[in-house]
Image 1 (cartoon, rainbow, N blue to C red):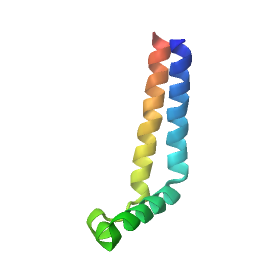
Image 2 (cartoon, rainbow, N blue to C red; image 1 turned 90 degrees about the vertical axis):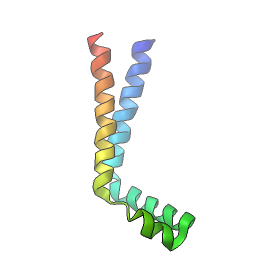
Image 3 (tube, rainbow, N blue to C red; image 1 turned 120 degrees about the vertical axis):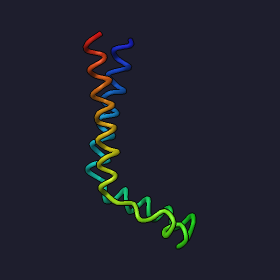
Length: 76
């Protein structure tokens, strides 16, 4: 059971990471729009414009977490 649940979690983490990397521009625009809707122009000035490059870092982090889970499951 532990292997099954761990495999699902690892797969979902890798999938989310890949989707974040592929859809980084759309997610960046979504974040910018939600910041502006919530805080107005002040929010955009204070928080800055989310850049797609940072979304790649988040996506790579999720992929690495998924790979780490898979490695731990395989080496147990």
